[in-house]
Amino acid sequence: MKKTPIKSVVKALLELQNEGKSTTLLGIGPMSHNLLQASFELARDYDFPLMFIASRNQVDMDELGGGYVNSWNQQTFVKAIRNMAKDVNFDGLYYVCRDHGGPWQRDNERNAHLPVKEAMELGKKSYLADIEAGFDLLMIDPTKDPFERGKVVPLKDVIERTVELIEYCEQERKSRNLPEIGYEVGTEETNGGLTSTEVYETFILRLQEELGKKGLPMPTFIVGQTGTLVRRTIQAGKFNFKNAFELAQMAKKYGVGLKEHNGDYLDDVTLLEHIPSNITATNVAPQYGTEETRAYLKLADLEQKLVKHGLIEEASRVKDTLLVHAIKSERWRKWMEGDQVNLSVEEIMKDDTLSLEILDIAGHYTFNNDEVKAEIDKLYENLRKVNIDGQRFVVEYIKRPIRDYVECFNLKGSSTRILSKIQSSQLQGTGVN
Image 1 (cartoon, rainbow, N blue to C red):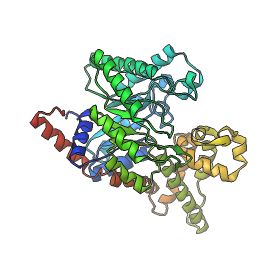
Image 2: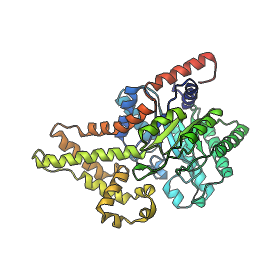
Image 3: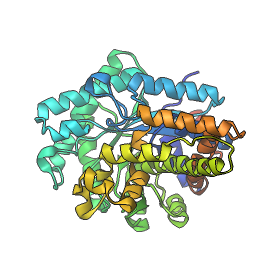
Image 4: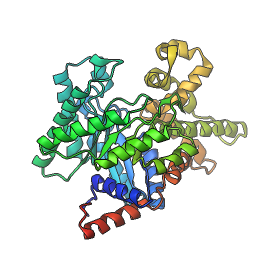
């Protein structure tokens, strides 16, 4: 069956907004097989489209260093998603998306201060692997420039590099006779501030002009900063409804959807504000990884009680193993603030309170570690002895926060509404296809 392009889905959503039937799509950072399972089961039961968003650090070509999530490259990532959909009998809409693709988007490339030409070539190589693997949406993000640390990359450079990368991707896609894909672009790296409507429209207009000159498609999403910002395991930003609404209207004026990043840990009121603000999609990633870590820790607490009750002989070391590898990963630095960003691993190991906080923040970065996986297997085995399905508990635990977003974002039944709108528009000849 031919897959409905993500661009058609967004066009349908923009039309539904005009009818008072707004829905915000949820972009899910795929931290594990358990998260894939939880997402597909919810989407199957509640009838909504899935978007899996993977950064280059998470999923990339083996020759470029691979990814920390299950050692997935583009091909194995797509295969894992397809297999999970089949395993849970999901036959609805789902989209594989590149989050923050492009030059300097791998930590090692940025830290090496690669020159522009080399960084762009590596970004293109990664995009080509995305395209060949069957990705549906590519985020074109040339805003992370090591030579502009602490500064906003000039708009001229962002537009020039964005157009060059879209042109490359379209040429490669067409030369392989592959289906239409969508593009996501942005004006700057999300930092908790706000994108002004003036800068946003300037970016759209200039991008529209440059893409038009080359006969290239307009993007499906344009990222706008609505005030969201993730630090530690909290929403440290402040959502600005007025700004979000104005950005959404501006994007819609040009036939594209507003995409919000850093949507983790939002309270229910803020989540509900997404519907009247007409935000078309929101990305959430570290929150769901943190929830999986918390699920393992709850099961580890249960294990200790089972040992005391004499029901199992020896508990796993899942908590200690997760903790040590989370701290050693140093990936928590991205989420810290102030002087703690520069603390050494040794300093953190000596601070029990801070160590546990780092575990909460960065436990999910270690799920693919062999020692961690061995301890999780032992945890599950111990629980099976007392008729507890630990893996099922973890999946259901992850579902809880995702379900909050599904309910507040009006996602229930949205796949049916979207497909109905697409079919209706095709019959009326309005061009949604």
